[in-house]
Image (tube, rainbow, N blue to C red):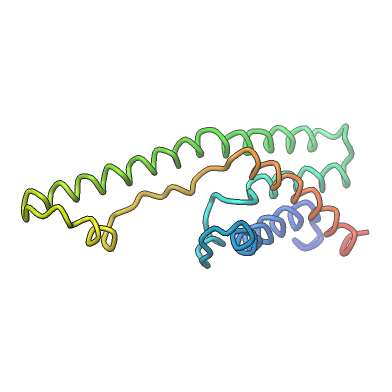
Length: 162
């Protein structure tokens, strides 16, 4: 068996890749900032975490059945990944927003003490240090990622493995 004959692996990896690419048009449709960096970000709509694990679960159910221990492992793994992407990782992202605000305030305060000019905010907007704030997912992003993963897994199976 070659790696390309491993339907669960191909489905999961393809779903992650396709979902990451999909983030660009989704951001455009939702009128959010659109950059190529969205393809490499770990947050946003839809969740590639959810898409990848639900695609893997779907593929294992198709190939092994519901009673398989592999299905149990995949479902457990998938639930943990999706829960983590909404929980700990989401909180880390929210902390990143607060850290960015604190960094901006500290920079402004430092410049005020040195220069004494209250009009430095505009200058600060161009050379701020930022913590990454796109770490986790909102529940709706996880839901759409999960649906997307199931659909993509079924399409991949129908096109290449049936």
